[in-house]
Length: 275
Image 1: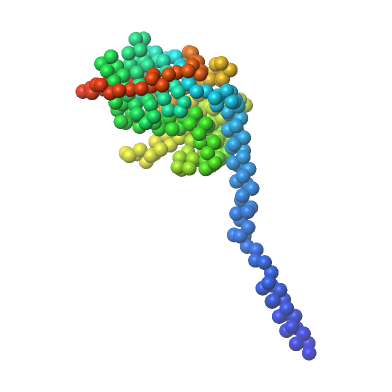
Image 2: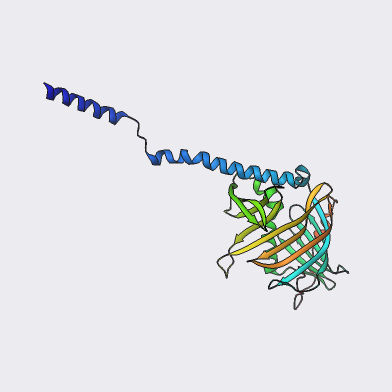
């Protein structure tokens, strides 16, 4: 009789175990990770929103065009190549840009959409293909493109990378990864939330990876919009250009005609780019 009761008890336990819900570590792992991922993305978004507010908030987001004046310096192997060149830059969101060089303003580089032109006293020629590609890469990763375009796209992933030292400043590092699997990392001053540095990487045909960096400094308000008056650009760790801006004006109502180009000259050799 005792053996029969034991058998019945064992049988009942087996049935109960078989009917109980299965709970494994792999089944619960995504749920456990989800809150952590959400918190990280929210931290990144909060920092980026603070950055936009620090740069002027809605006033910065509503900028339609900009005019700059200053001096630009080209670099070779980490040293300036000359005494610098005067420049006048005219920019219109999202894809129009014109920069004029020298006192006579007789050299200009004009970009409109995916096209680029070099303008000299001899005429207008198409932009060198390599120079145009480099410019478009920088434009597609600019602060305006990233913070006014990528950030508004629901398919863009945001990551808070943690605290970091950038240009001898304490910053928060945030990375945006867009729907094309293209990323930009911003280093934001932990006190002012203004951008200190921007960095992105891309693959070149003859290299495994190239790195472009821009450093922003000397922020001062222009028409109520905090604006960097010093911008340094480096390529693969080597400085290639630095601009010191003396005058900035926003929303001047620039005409689209400033950015038009009609090729009427084909040179045997191209002038050097004054950066």
